[in-house]
Image 1 (cartoon, one colour):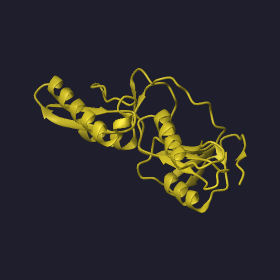
Image 2 (cartoon, one colour):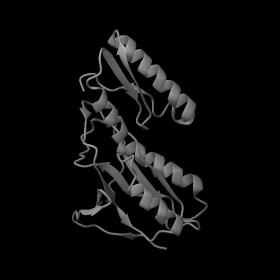
Image 3 (cartoon, helix red, strand yellow):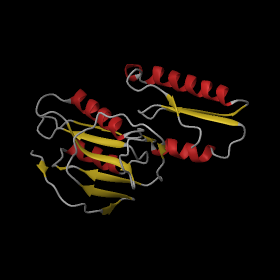
Amino acid sequence: MKSLFFITTIAAINISGCTMESLQEPNPTKTVPVGALDIYNLEHKVTLYSKVEFGRGAAIAFNDFRKSDKGYFGAFAYSSGSRDYSYGEATGHNTLKTAREYALDNCAVHLKGGPACKVIAVLTPMGFVDRHKMTLSKNITKDLHNLRNARKYIAIATNDAGYADWVAGYDTQESANSEALRLCDLRVKTQTPRHQKAYPCYLIPKQQ
């Protein structure tokens, strides 16, 4: 089966509570987001880079991906020319770059020959602009909103892969920060040890 690549102007279509757009895939950036935190609302959109004919399993997986309740940031990778139509998906990451990396990695694990996996679609927040600022997944954005009125000192530690831990009710900001980072580091070490160095935990800025 062949992938049909095309370039269009943006044409938005409502699909299952999200928006799907068709665009040409950009070159992946290696820059690291810096600066202030960029907070978005909880709605997301699907951007389709490449129109393909899916194998049955991949078609079901892609349908689940675009309707994911985890939402942004996410990516779907696919190898349309492989014998088994390999695919990989990722959702709930803090950056689009990380979501792409996870999707490609997940796809490559199942690839048994044929063209390399390629990202064909991504999930991003509505209104997302890559300003090289710190961004958060949908679920962590929810936590951040819920904790804004918490008493005493709070802290949220996360990593680009989307793992996070938060604490509240501490007597000092320093103690809250230390515990949040400890819990986040422990979670990453336990659940994805091979990614611990690539995606270290960090604190979400207090001012947000």
